[in-house]
Image (tube, rainbow, N blue to C red):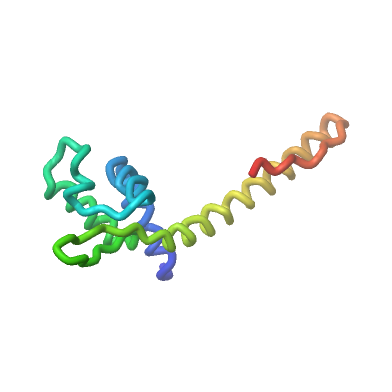
Length: 119
């Protein structure tokens, strides 16, 4: 497996957990300490710290030192890798649907118009 595939596997595995997805969504708005991230959850600080560690190992977040604070920062660059991967398969699926539309049109004797791109 190449490096990008391994990285994608770690990212998708990390985001499979709803708590980690929520942490990523909150970090998209602003950096936060583990203590600040833990506030809305009914779990220990250590449990949230473990979730942050999984996100860090997947390359989704980094931690820095700012005086006495250790803010967690979302690394949005990894989303570019995910977006490229998803986009490739979206285009392939759309092409299959276009071919299916054309086939169904020929079978029923109807002309089909190209689908409008919803994005």
